[in-house]
Image (cartoon, rainbow, N blue to C red; front, side):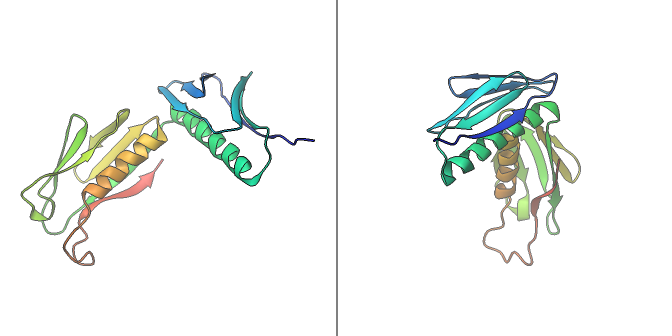
Amino acid sequence: MVKEVARQVEIPEGVDASVANAVVTVKGPKGQVSKRIWYPGIEVKTEDTHLIVNSSIDNKRQRAMVGTLAAHIDNMVKGVTQGYEYRMKVVYSHFPIQIKASGQELVINNFLGERRARSAKLLPGTKVQIGKDELVITGVDKEAVGQTMANIEQATRVRGFDIRVFQDGIYLVDKR
């Protein structure tokens, strides 16, 4: 007797989901997200208003991967219906930081008084709004928005100074 492990992800009205060659594509009112969802022994199929992540092998690793892949699909559905928004705060006490978005990168000038500008890569599908002392990163792909936020935070890491004194940087404040 083989026990199957399966998880269902509900697809709300107004959202279209399809699976082709292990690539799951979810389209909704905010946009479209495609991602390769594949693991040996696990299949993803479409039924009416659900996507089903199914494994014919029942062991600890397969159960974990079924849950992980279902969570990825759920994040894709949430992204195309509600979107993701990360808010970051620009903090400085010594030298005022100037920020500009140019193309696919964010340029940070005058960080800790450095003459050379620092830059952070902005991933495709994300939008960055620059306020006086705040950045708002929005998008439909949770991984792209999170990675863009991490790139900005890493670009403003303090190197060569005592971080207890020099707490300047751009930090995550809120996720929605």
